[in-house]
Amino acid sequence: MNVDFTAILAVLSIVTGVIWGAYVLLLKMKNNNQSETEAKDAKSKEEKSKDKSKKEPLLVEFSRFLFPVFMVVLIVRGFLVEPFQIPSGSMLPTLEAGDYILVNKFSYGLRSPLGYFKIIDMGEPERGDVIVFRYPENPKIDYIKRVVGVPGDRLKYINKVLYVNDEPVEIKPLQPYAKDPRFMEFKEDLGEVTHNVLHNPYESNVPVGEIIVPENNYFVLGDNRDNSRDSRFWGFVPDENLKGRAFMIWLHKKQGEWPSQWSRIGTIIE
Image (cartoon, one colour):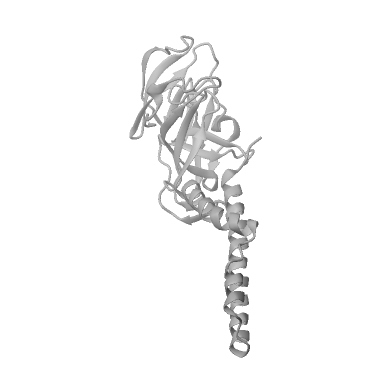
């Protein structure tokens, strides 16, 4: 079950804000009416004191307390930084299942937390960026992959070699992957980013014939090239599906362990 916490926070902020605001408005109207009445028929001090000592209804009291809390969390999560959990090994060796990462929400512009339309344009993804986005085939699901093609790029993926604008992306073999020797680890230079990828020599190639990335779209791949469901299977990521750029691992925890790898905490994602 996928829950959109940002949308829930937005709804809770609206509801608590309306309850608190309506109560304050009604109280102000009541006080104004009392002031007009008192000008003609002044209340006793005892009656005034009794009116002032009346407590807020419990629902209003909770709303007054929770509204600023919801608003602060909504602003941070909706516009600044959002946590995200890595669910699978499709981004190995860069990211492992059990990594908890932070996503910079304003890298590619400020967006509405509900409609996801762009409010302020602040930049665009570049080749090599690791991005979180709403899965085009089911926008309720968040995906994480690496951008390998930006608008206008001519791409192809043949024999496990990525070509960008007719130039092969340079890869250098390193060693068998330490955590699973079936995979071979390579160093890849993609734009300004140098990172590692995995290839499985026992898996057949998933080829991509020559394509051109359309305007306002991006082509993405998982770093675990032979074990990733990415743009090779379902196509491009539209700009409106972008959520932000992944930049740091803040926790690593697998089920039943706490945490399992301290060394991964604080790792910058490249």
